[in-house]
Amino acid sequence: MKLSANLLLRQTQSLVMTPQLMQSIQLLQMTHFELNQFIALEVEKNPLLEFPSNDGETGGERGEAEDGEYAHQPEDAGSDDGYDNRSEALSSDWYDNGGSASTSRLNDELDANYTNVFPDDGAPQRLDAPELVSQWKSMPGSGEGADYDLDDFVAGQVSLRDHLAQQIPFVLPDMADRLIAQNFVDQLDDCGYLQADIVEAGERLGTSLAQAERVLATLQSLDPPGVFARSLAECLAIQLRQKDRYDPAMQALVENLELLARRDFATLKRLCGVDEEDLLDMLGEIRQLNPKPGSGFEAGVSEAITPDVVVRSASDGGWLVELNPDTLPRVLVNQSYFSRVTKTKDAEVQAFLSDCLQSANWLTRSLDQRANTIMKVASEIVRQQDAFLLHGVDYLRPLNLKTVAEAIKMHESTVSRVTSNKYMLTPRGLFELKYFFTVSISAVAGGDSHSAEAVRHKIRALILQESPEAVLSDDDIVDMLKKGGVDLARRTVAKYREAMNIASSVQRRREKRALAKVVGF
Image (cartoon, rainbow, N blue to C red):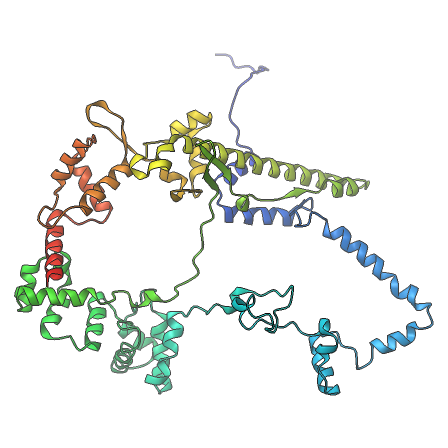
């Protein structure tokens, strides 16, 4: 076969992911916090991007004008005969830029209350009790225009480590013991359990095992009761010892908590050597203990979720869907600055500013497109789940990404990115957008399908309504769901029940009977 070179002209279609398109996709799935960080970085890199000011004025231009205006004042004033005297007065010992510090010095040297003569020059007065300002007008700091911050009157949260650090000096006077105790405090988790090996800690600190155990035993006597325990059984045992209730029967019960979790009361009665009445009393005491002694203290900073979409009832009986203005990013393109700087004849500067302008315009268009896409998806979700908003979770309809994507004429991947880490505030509460997408469960006799979340809610409601004498098995739940029009297999009911952390019918029967006897006694 003879080979030869030819020139061909061919047209093909292909999907190309440009860098701008990839960043637009990333913007779509960013959370509010991540989006603000991204915009802050872009504003820092791009001189044409800026955040809008609250008053709508460009502070930079006004600041330059003010600086220029005041920059010529010393020269003009220097021609005045009294300027030198005024300079001497300002540089004298009587002048001080400290404001309130100068006021205090004048009060001491003149033996007079300077703030009575010139109240505007004095230090601002703080309110003694801001909640009583409307009743006591004579209170210091209650004048007109006096502002106060309520955070100044809020008691600070005490952490578990701070609470323990206040007690350790009273029980461990030796500095070596305090060093070991501090090492144990640093290895506490949020629940107050010690996540450390005593042998390893002793070797690392260069101390003996006996000393480490002695320090740990002392620390276990601190408040809150049960702190520094290494297991749930040890935590309960510490609290029972402090109550003087750790007898041999209670010790056997604490050492066999797995039997208590299985509701095997017959074996527990045999191991503890008590009758049924005493066992119920012991179980009542166990329930009064705190399995997480450190949970009552501040563990860390909790971040509040800011909804991206707000849904409210409209006057015409429908729903008003709008974007949360607090989550909408605000960024502007400074066209006036671009027009002034591009007058330069430097080609390199013009090319750089042209790239910056293109990038800034792309960012503003991408943010606008992101807001419109979120609005379209949220509006369609509200239209599909109108019954849920009116009547509750029992009326949650089965919904998938394809249904919403076809309704708003977008791709499923786009809807998936929009619903990730986005939240909607409704009259029913705050929900993630993915909450409204649930699996469809077929109905009996070809009726309307049911949402998996609504079915789980029905299972939970049925179990909560059962009595100790008539505990529902999984088969009973299947029969009751069929009567309600839900066709569900027994293994699916068991899977939903275990996902909701609900015990089996045998365990629930033992627990409900035990609780009924405790209430009866």
